Image 1 (cartoon, rainbow, N blue to C red):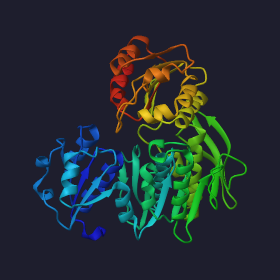
Image 2: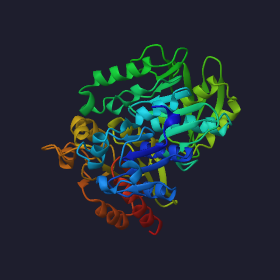
Image 3: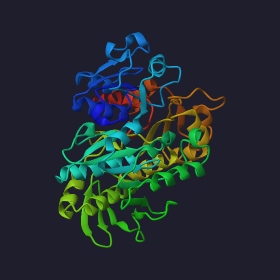
Image 4: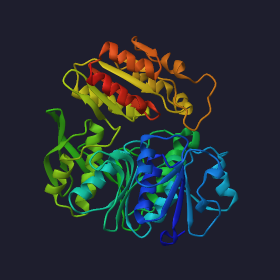
Length: 451
């Protein structure tokens, strides 16, 4: 399907962060955009305020008249998270509508554009957001489809006037194989989504296929140490092609120098904490310099990048309490997050509230999760958020908690967490997880601010 021939778009699962970005894009273009999601959220309410009609009833009868019968100019976008027995999804299937996954639609949009695609089992949302911000802030410009709400723009989609597009390339369900980028980044290839891939070797093979889809003359950037050939390596390492050097903490900010075989930028200030974010920024700088953007402008853009919602986001920082929220849901992400907290606040007691995401991920990485969680000072563990999965026998939060060696640990509900924080007033609290743990952010914020 050609982009110019699309006049109407329906999103099955419109409340997802990636899906909502596409919905906003088509609405901006003037197409008729509607959607379905299971529950109303702040994000879907925002979409409705922007003029997008959304139904929360999984019935074909709830569809707008424009989407009851198939027409050649109609596109239906769906997420794999939607159950296969969804009545709305099956209505579109049985009526013969053109159905595409989010990644396929990104392929349609980016076709004919200069595409910068960022992939990785973690780090891709922050990295793609930094790349897009640098291009925007320096005046180079771009359109961008991001996997999070950027704090600078309060949006997950950015609109540009040139032919450049930045996309987050999702490895889940091998979705990123629909893209053919001019610039590709692979931030990480840790074992994940084993319910799809079976084992790490198949996941790595998928990343190799993604890297092989680079256009002729394109550039591939890979984190140093990844098993991918012919890439420009980057890391906080003296042996990488693009390097972060002299990394230090100054005034609760991370500061570093950038170097490659041609360029050198001193004393770059970054609001985002952690070595992993310095490395994410390093590859974004390398891309910007390769595009010919002035180094001083790049340095200034990095310094004013405020981050992404739910990626090491400060919710409360009032002198008495510090509350940070993060999307981390893989052991490596948790470790990077914890390390950043400890670097910034080495003398404070760390209270962690963690919500495991998916039964299969908890089963596959229980030992790794337990090892990282055991490094906290206090752990409040929520029940597993199932998302698209049915329960697995014997796999629950107690199964995980039993492996945690920390003595100050407990399983609890979200209401208990809010009351516990109100009663104990922890000096440093971290909420982490990719499920619905975000629903306690505002209650915790109010509790701490009124303490």
